[in-house]
Amino acid sequence: MTSFAQKSPVDETDMAVKGIPRKGQRVSVQLDSKRVEDSWKKQLDEQFGSKVKADKGVYTMDGVVIDAVSKTPVRVISKVDAVPTGTTIWWSIDLGNAYLGKESTPVQWKAAEGYLKDFARKLYREDLAVQVAEAEKALVSSQNNHMAVISKADAIKKDIEKNKARKIEIQQQLAQNAAELQQYNNQVDMNLKEQEAARADIVNMRVALEAVKERMNKIE
Image (cartoon, rainbow, N blue to C red; front, side, top):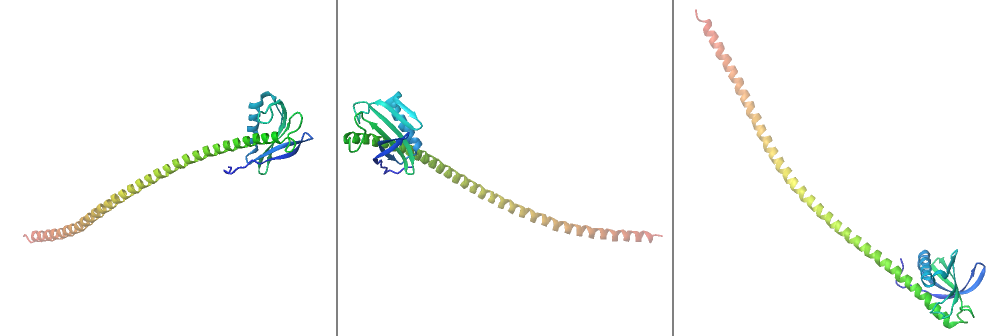
């Protein structure tokens, strides 16, 4: 992620390319080196086509015209490097009669500086566009998650209502069960009384039987 206050300082820097020191111009960007190099190579290819020669991270272009810098063909050597603060794009431009230099070719230097800064601004715009797309996706995801949470809350409310209804149903069943239990207890009490009455009948019947037997024994 990058901030909205990106700067692209351009400075004059010597760099040894394949053992040969060269004076050049360097711009710094606070972005991933792989993305920067891919974009730089794409821009060079689109602008200069088959004249771009790549060898171990060094880009060489012979006889190319960079309108912003020179109307006549120039030779360019360029390199992209990863640094702790992001990435640097360096190039050395042979104008034919001189190398690009802050003091020696100030007009061309300023034009080349503008070219590099325009490229850096394009990179930042692309990076911000990616961030915007990611933020929009994150927003949609957040909104979907919010809706899911709301749906979950609704489901929980329904479960609570079901639980309450079930509780009432259980309470009614318990009340009914208690009434049935009381009825059964009443039936038990009544049965005990019936048993007592039946035992009393048995005793009475025995007494009556004994009385009849006694009368029979008294018959002569």
